Amino acid sequence: MFFVTCPYSQPSDFSIFRHTVSPPHPKVLHIMTVYRPIFGALLGAVLLCAASPVFAQTAGGSIAIEPEPLACLPVGDRGNEPDIPPDARPEDVIDERADNAITFATVRNLPTDAEVRLYFRRLHDTVEDLYYVRMYPVGTDRFEGIFPEAEARELTRYDLGDGELDKRAAFPDQQPEFRDDDYRWSAWWKAKEVTDSRNPTGELDKEIIDERAQQGRLISRHWLAAQDDETIERWLMRQTNEPAEYFIAVHDAQGARLERTDTFVSEVRDDCEVPLNARQLSRAENLVIGETSLWQIGEIPFHWLCDGLVSRVNIYGVLRGDEVCRACVIAWWKRAAPYAIAGAVTGIAIISADDPDDPVSPVLPQ
Image 1: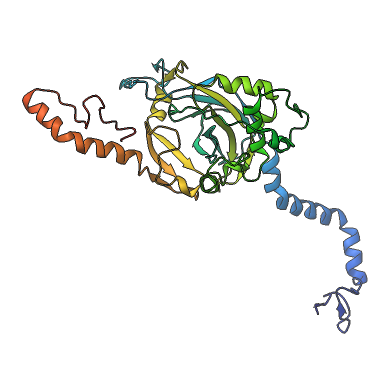
Image 2: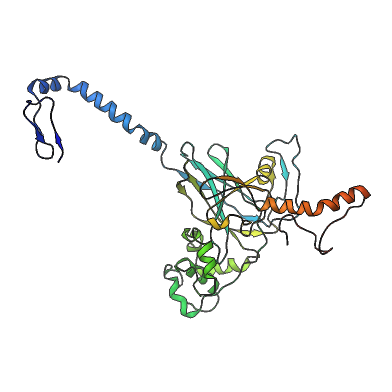
């Protein structure tokens, strides 16, 4: 039982708080009435101070993210290795045909200490977990994010059979019945979105899905739901590589997500032209990639290249040096070093490889 006593009541008058409370002494009541304006001002000041953190947080309004269109991503490893001149200025264009894509977004009402991130993955039938990079400010409310180099990977086709049409139940307004076999690939992707197993025809590896789609399966493909089967089918048929999916998000200092955009998709093409200036190229050569799942530790980013990747951030927000891509370069150098020294002594350039027609790659070693 919880008891209280009113300091201005009679000494012998105790009350159980949840039942009765003694009235104030007449003198106290008189003072409170006379000085009510002062008490009101003091009370208002106390309440304002208590509420000020909330007002500071919401004074600018809700966070708004406005992404700019991204037409395509280039296929990486096209032989572009430009050097940044020592006297280069940030806006000087260094690489006219870079292997890294870049995207921009305007973010309004960004809270103090918040971070803008670019999340990305390849459009893959089984692996759905994402990676991310930090986006940096490049003007008033404008941010840029650099993708790693995309690996050349063919998009695998899967078709939805007649007995699985009901798996598109989440899209009843988009061609509820098949008229022919033209749109079964797009139907398969839409069925995957609404199938708990992420395996609409049972053809995929369940163990890989369970391990490598833990977080990514929760990220809706808004671009897929917004188009009809015919449009998606024709688009899929045009792809020469796995497209890239991405979205932009804002996180607070503790890593909690505050806001995000829809998920978008862009083609990965060899003819994609992306010029990078000195500032952008320097970031592309010093990438810090964030992980979203434990299986990504110790693995080359799935269907992305190592070029420029120097550090990682694990799922707990701990920054560390990259342990895979840098190891590939070191291993390649150790293997080639004796021959390089011999070549320097004799004046003959020597390339070390198991097969003379297949030189060792520091990016994806055999």
